[in-house]
Length: 133
Image: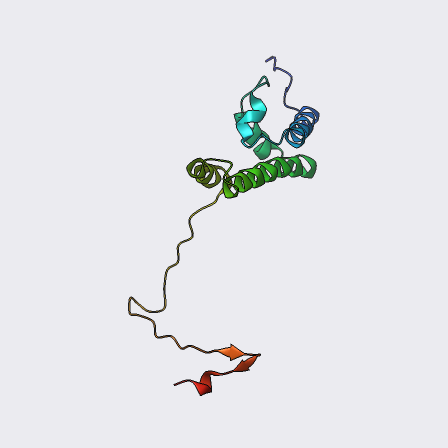
């Protein structure tokens, strides 16, 4: 018979770790990157992704993971907006870790031709376009 090691990353263990991470984040507003939470732990940040996948059907664990990620994303965004963080690194991190992307607009209606636009002014809620020529 094959002897298997007992599972280390049980639901109880993961929940305990996630709660510890949330407390750490809430008590240290300087933490902005997920990797900072792993500097004193016996496992790598890769475990976080594994837990996210393994326990995706567990609402308590998935909500804790969402809370951690959301808090760090908000801190990163605000740090960038408030010029407390390097803008290039902030943008890089938000794009690579939180799905942010540059907004691109494509005009699918004009087939490359300049669009003709009409100007309509509203003054006090009334259409004033008939007054302009």
